[in-house]
Image 1 (cartoon, rainbow, N blue to C red):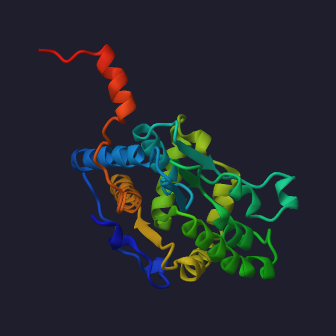
Image 2 (cartoon, one colour):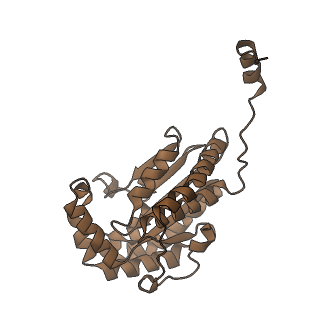
Image 3 (spheres, rainbow, N blue to C red):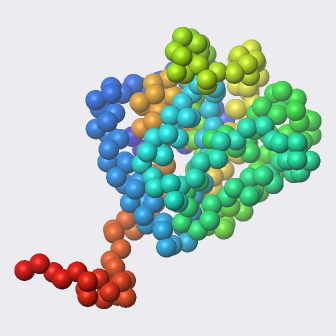
Length: 269
């Protein structure tokens, strides 16, 4: 499994995606463990360096974004790993440019930041639900490309993942959440309202990927009907992109720290 397998290089046809690989739970754990180790090394390599990263997670309702976020959180040290769950803008934010609230959440040096939904709401939900005028969401493709080009030019590693499931799989997951009291909190009225406009969202997603999967910030389209496979794919993409060209060997102690330690900790004979 390689990150390159999921790159969006041209306009996708979501209704024609038919290959939804499956991974057994036993294989999932075996394959995930080395990725977790590598991702921890990547995070440690970022500390004390100028490296920083942004991971954008988008996908259908119930596609598994939260599961990916949780598992990243189990692996990474929260002191330099941040998650921003994005919902509707506040009344104050609605008076500002829609990108302004995202500038304020970008990572500092050494940090890895995940956006659980993102600025792409402008060309998805705001477009479909007519919360933005046509000229506004059409203009947003150019604005987003320029925004992301600025991030990359400033040294931010940008990874954009879309988790794709079929309509039938979404219905199955809705039923699971309705019958499982521990998952019921995840459901909202908007989930069912959005379902009624599946085709509108499908066109908006395809337009989004066609317009914004640029060389400097590619989209990765993950078939996510099988949760273990989707999580492995997301980890593979994040690990490959964030670790590319980064020395992962643990750094030696700096001389000052080593000297202080030598006075306190004597080597055993």
